[in-house]
Image (cartoon, rainbow, N blue to C red; front, side, top):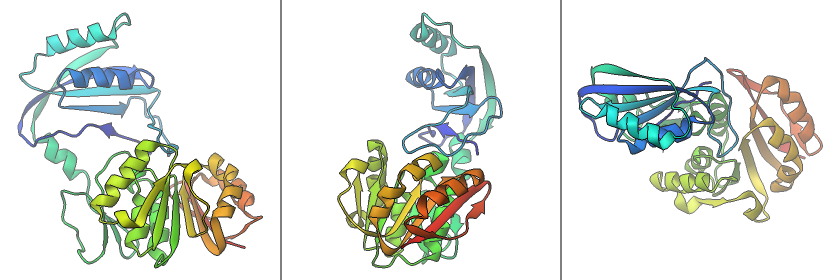
Length: 306
């Protein structure tokens, strides 16, 4: 799975463009991108420069490639020599990474970026709908969510596995915990599907802010409360869903067992196939576990509290 981190173009316009392309690494890419933004780049994109796969990050992490290409988009009349000089000065005393300048054909880049993202369906009734598009099925359960990192928008297989589970199970009048909530997509889906209350938990305060913002856009703010892990009050949920990573899932098994009522459901994702047995074994003392469900190289585990 590849990740694409970009600043979208603020206004839609058709004109020639110039792009500065820098070849750097994961350690230097964010600082270089910030310098280019400060020099008036309309958009800055971080891209894979060596065909390196990246996997689902832990909550709050932003994954980058060991070889990262930083692409800064400028209007054609921008003073590129002055921008490069300013970036060089800001980068000193380090030597500026290798770069090149390219001219792009006359295209509406804002519209092209937006056209990349279409409404996505998960199961029978659940859709993720970007804000600039019409819902294909207005009477369906539509989550309004704009693209960002793949793990937050439903495009990553682990998120899809969790959304499909929610679509096929009733959360009506249930207490739900979304542990590792990220953008809040799973918490919002549970709320829109009828949950009585949802706790959205994450160790990144920015994820909690994003969850609250997205809950407001979807008119489910009264149904969702956010908390850091250590601030989650004692509770027993009907459903606990955690889309994080195998290591944390194993270590959190006793904690999750305390958070799920007898007969309640646990849904775990962010697991590679060769990690599934280890995670499953960690939960067997407390849960009756079903066979793993695999999609596109990732696994979902689910079970019921004994």
